[in-house]
Image: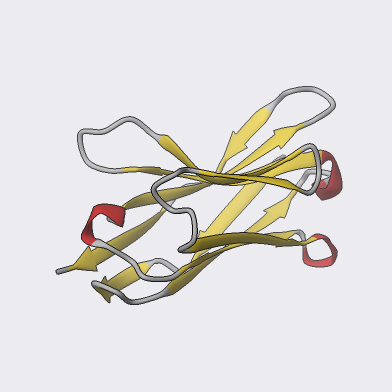
Length: 117
């Protein structure tokens, strides 16, 4: 059974930083594209940052230069370092694992990030 557990969300002031973590179990971590998505109230879920085809990274234009995705395969963990946070970054952030073998995708339960102005 696939399980993705996010942590690290919270309330931060405009310009602050947070680091999100996602620990995966039940998957072969190295065979999955891991990523972060977010969903603000009344909005569709959108890509924030993702590893594609192993080590290639893709970022949303709105977070380039501020957010960094990284992974530790030994710990089955993917991180999202978020710097220079803005109120418009406020959303529930979800971890995603997508198997490069089967195409099957899994989601975590989400962690709330709130940036106050």
